[in-house]
Image (cartoon, rainbow, N blue to C red; front, side):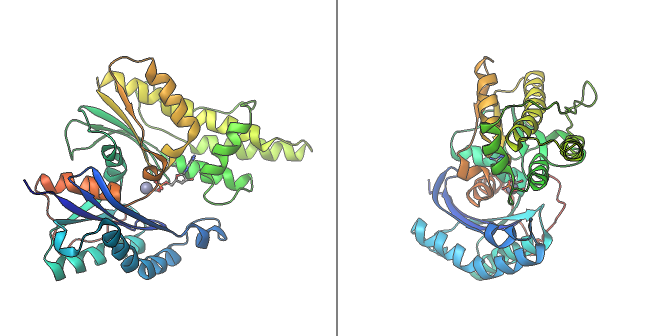
Length: 335
Ligand code: KG4
Ligand code: ZN
């Protein structure tokens, strides 16, 4: 039985990434060129700038991934690439690079959904056991995804407005913290106390949906009102209060769904999975629940990377998925 070697390519937002993995789980290389420094001065990701950086970096990053893994294109069995969702001009760079290599070297091509990648980041650490539930929290997504087998995803709840990471970044901006704000709020929250009363959007009793825009507005209003009265609010306490509100809702709904669907595992995925407060609360709560295993990827596999795309791509490839050369970037691809 020959090894399965997959090259992963990810360019959906502001990281140009390539990775090589063996047999779906073993990382041979995982290269990420971050553009954060370039976008920072604009306070968020500038799509045109992102595409331009991807074009400049993509060849170097892929080459580095091959060299680091000690393989050549001859060793690659499949190329897995993020086809969506994301910024269209950014996605196009990865998709076209993948198609070019696939065509020139006659290597099968597999389009991968970005969120499938985030979920499969967990498989780089430990084998999945079905049914499982994944709490996906990133800059663009907040979803509860139920999986009954490999490669099949059922969204049982999602945000009706802002994604969790988006809320973090917006609140961070009102506190004058640099982009991306999530890690800064996380750090401040750990130094502060949740003394400020902020809302929690539970929505309808039986809903697994989320909503964070009301919370974001409440933070902005509270800061504004305090300023008008000449009072000051400690940003650490605001960060702690905001973070507690987000975590309360995420964790409560995850536990409820995990029990209702009788899952064997709960997988935390997406950039916000790097959040210290969220990781700790999930660990604390699931330690009390028998029969459900909690998986949380290490920090470098939480934020965007290509090893996770190769991991999801490996499974899809084994299940027989092949993409045509007509594969296109799809900014609003459904999982
Ligand atoms: O998954 P990701 O790298 O990109 C998307 O697919 O969106 O997620 C990026 C998001 C950003 O909103 C960032 O602020 C947030 O993840 N993030 C965090 C933390 N680290 C990254 N949010 C809260 N706490 C963190 N420690
Ligand atoms: Zn992501």
